[in-house]
Each structure stands twice: as structure tokens, then as C-alpha cells.
Length: 237
Ligand SMILES: NC(=O)c1ccc[n+]([C@@H]2O[C@H](COP(=O)([O-])OP(=O)(O)OC[C@H]3O[C@@H](n4cnc5c(N)ncnc54)[C@H](OP(=O)(O)O)[C@@H]3O)[C@@H](O)[C@H]2O)c1
Image (tube, rainbow, N blue to C red; front, side, top):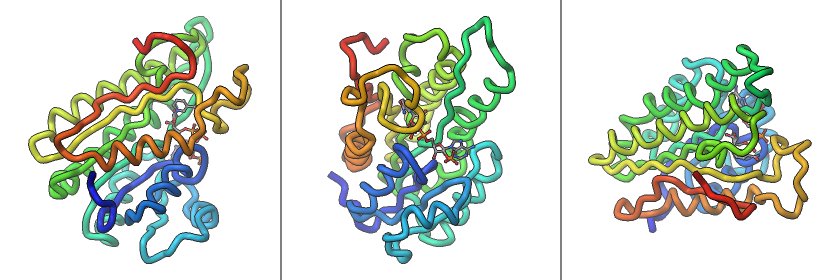
């Protein structure tokens, strides 16, 4: 496995939910961290116990494409390198085809698909330079199969993120970059609030963070392209 010490990882949406759990896990593992969130002051408060020598708290609003490029530049200025990118920030808006709402769809398209593409574009030269760059795109089982009709817009954006993951892994493979689409079922975060599922069945975000940390640390010779995580006995396609 790759030793985290000296490696630098960027995590979007690092202020709550899965992103918070990933940030804590990667910090504990010894990574240098560039954490992104819409409100960097609140982000720094959430992670107040972290050693500032090893962590950058950056503003990243996935609704503004330029904010990804600025965040990558700030990360390189601070650490001189980027070894991993976790595209975690995401948005769920529920509607069926009959209720389809263009504004809600565009919001999700921007945050769930476009922002990861342009963040990866900005980070790619640095990930290639690493020789063992890693990208984890947090998609969803809703990016692999359709189970709820009111998730149509969300699924469309998460399927798109899977497509991005496969294109990226082929484009940058020769330079040691490995890309994984992480596809969990329902996790115990704010996003799952209101879903009628027994809380004990949900994926604990700390478990998901451990899985992502494992993927990030795999050697170049062991790449996981898609990682579906089930809570029901159901097909993943
Ligand atoms: N929870 C689930 O059941 C589930 C299942 C499968 C996949 N996922 C995916 O897992 C990822 C993490 O979600 P979660 O469960 O942790 O949900 P969450 O608790 O709702 O957190 C969502 C995160 O995304 C951030 N975000 C939303 N819009 C943003 C924007 N415009 N710019 C920057 N950050 C933005 C939020 O920041 P703010 O605090 O500023 O809003 C927050 O940090 C998402 O990609 C989600 O689609 C979740």
C-alpha cells in the first residue's frame, strides 16, 4: 500500500457528512490535506483540532467553476504537490419526470458532474506529476441503477459522474493516475434525512471513509474502477 506521509489529498464538501468523515480518516492516516467547502471559516471550526501545518482550509463552491481552479492553485502554492482528489461534494433534488424542474436539474448537473470534471482538469497535471495520483469520484448506486423514479435528475448526474470516472482513468492511466467511482447506497448523513429506511441499515460515513482511504492507498498495480456498496440485496446495474 502507498504510505500516506508526504502525500497531499484534496477533499471537497469536507465540512459535513461523508466529506467530514473522509477528512478525519485521511488526517488520522497522515496525509497533508487541502479541504474545500463553501464556508472555509466554518470548515476550520469543524476541524479545529487539526494541525494547521498539515491542513489547508479553502473556499470551494462547486456552483462556480473557477473556484475549483483557484482551489487547486492554492493547494499547489501551499504544498507544492497534489497526490489525490476526492470529488465528494454533492446535491440531491428529488422530482419525477412529471415534476421535472430545470433549475433543480441544473443545480445538480453543476455540482455533481460539471464541478468534478473541471476540478479534475485543474488537478490532473499535478496528479500525473505524482506518479501515483488518485481520484475518487463519489457517485452513488443511483449512478449505476435506477431504483426510485423521484431520483431521475440525481441519477442522471451520478451516471454522468461514472462516465467521467471511466474517461479519466483511461486518459491518465499511463502516468500512474488511478480513478475510482465510489457508489454507495444510502448513508447516514443529512442527505438521507427523510428517507424511510431503518437507521441501523444505513452505511456509516466512517465505514465509507475507510473504504475510500483504502482505495486511495492501493498501489498502481491494483486499481478499483467502480466500488458499489449495498445495503439491500439488489443488483448494482
Ligand atoms: N447520503 C447518501 O445516502 C448518499 C448516497 C450515495 C451517494 N452520496 C453522495 O455522497 C456525497 C456526500 O454526500 P453526503 O451524504 O455527505 O451529503 P450531505 O451531508 O448533504 O453533504 C453534502 C456536501 O456537499 C456539499 N455541497 C453541496 N453543494 C455544494 C456546492 N455548491 N459547493 C461545494 N460544496 C457543496 C455540502 O456543503 P454545504 O454544507 O455547504 O451544503 C456538503 O459538504 C455526495 O456526492 C452525495 O451525492 C450520498
